[in-house]
Length: 63
Length: 481
Image 1 (cartoon, each protein chain N blue to C red):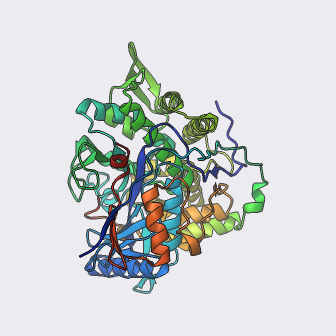
Image 2: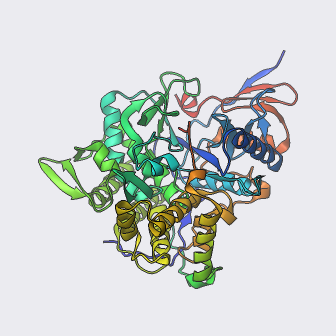
Image 3: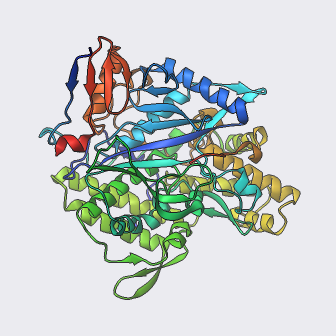
């Protein structure tokens, strides 16, 4: 027969819980983040549209 | 007006926030295998789940449930025989909710199935082809994104109405955005699912059944007097910022109702408000009737919720969290209604999609999406208007794809359309058992035991260890009573 035990959730918040209030994040030059050109974006969006069609998207039965 | 600052990455904190009574929450997200139908869709979903099982520490819920997998960040399972559903583990603090979704996506991104020579791609699809082809008059088949909230007590109908009343305008803050059709007139909307919602409360939302705003779940996951409800009126946003705002604002709203805080206004036309565009006027009642834009109402609601939440803040850092969410929520609402400018845009689903859809329309010779919508409405079968709208619809659906190579969200990020938000608690695909602090303790315990290989079977409320010990993991509220 299986032994049993019950785990209990903490009854209160730990006093040491620290909270991040959202300290300001330093600004970055967003251009450093860019990996693809404007043209490549257009190409990627077109490529998705060529690979799939709206009739591929059917959710019958979904919640 | 808040000045939009899109050049600072938004940092999603890793620490939990103490706002008095914890509101336990989580999100279930339904993902549809796109590009396959019928048995092929079933086989694809089964294959994807099999790959998930081998990619991370996981165990099934019982010996005969191989497609019902519990892992540290989420339960992955087969839904309706053909969808992959991801249910994030329970959180005691909302900033953990977007982390769990991103962690689950990082796993699904490593799966792959092909059919008929092309990839099968998992997407969350707030709208579908029957909507498009019928001009909004077809059956309501939006994929679900259910926000689970554990209530300390049952609500009466007035309290459910109050909860919903606070939330009606907020899809302009955190909605997934998208294209919707009514009377064969396409338009950009805060959330296509809003057109499918027709009642306040119900017990089911499958198939053709009318979609409610709130689902009441009568089940052992929350034994009486506790109750688990699901807010099902909203589609699932892809952006972690939108997802974070949704989780915070929903828990603030629930806490306000728990404490019987009443907003100083009442929404007179719920469904019209839910479905309204950001700049549409909606009617509210204060001492007398007022007409305001949905954006104004959303900002007023965010500020009122923040005032309500602040009363429960345990310390100064919790007050700072409330202020941060107030600022982000108001900025997101303003960004949803702002005239489109240059990139980068505010990193919410609505802002990014508006930018992308205008870009697609312009690439096909239209001034913007609005002109494309007018042209399609006048001549739906017209070659250029039809093919352009097809491209918009496909990119709308693939925005929320798990597959980075087939996701318009990911394409936009790489091209600098927006600056990716950062998680303070980094996501490490090789160590997903190290969960953020905001995940509730029973899920932390389960994660550690899964990683150690100590579990034979598990579900939300219990587990059986490899040495035959049965352990109960009751829902958090019942432990606090």
